[in-house]
Length: 137
Image 1 (tube, one colour):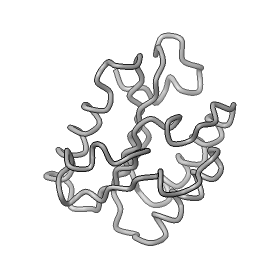
Image 2 (image 1 turned 120 degrees about the vertical axis):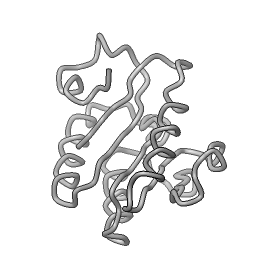
Image 3 (image 1 turned 30 degrees about the vertical axis):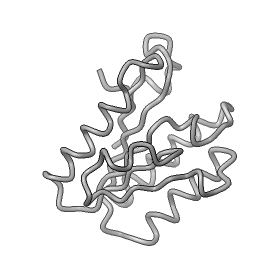
Image 4 (image 1 turned 90 degrees about the vertical axis):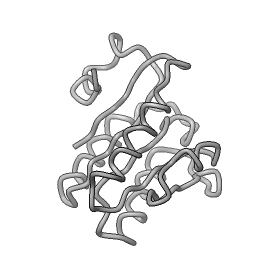
């Protein structure tokens, strides 16, 4: 399953994502991963959540980021949820590959029973059709 929290910048998407991750840490017996582009929110998360700071790695496009996520999953098959804070801060490339990226994420989500929740900046009313099915209201 893929869920996207999409709204304009400064509307509390990250706080909502952190709250969801922390709630999951108390309710879910699987391992939870939180991926961000820096470590500013590391201490806002439950200590049982594995925090991944992508600034330590050269992730320049969505294909590389997909491979990065696959590497995380291959290391630990007990992952039940992955939270990603603002894909386009992690991947500085605003290319048209988001649709393909989400298709690939959907496949691994189904194959490994992992829920993905991520944030994106933008107006959900003007989101492309391929995103609308994932957007949380």
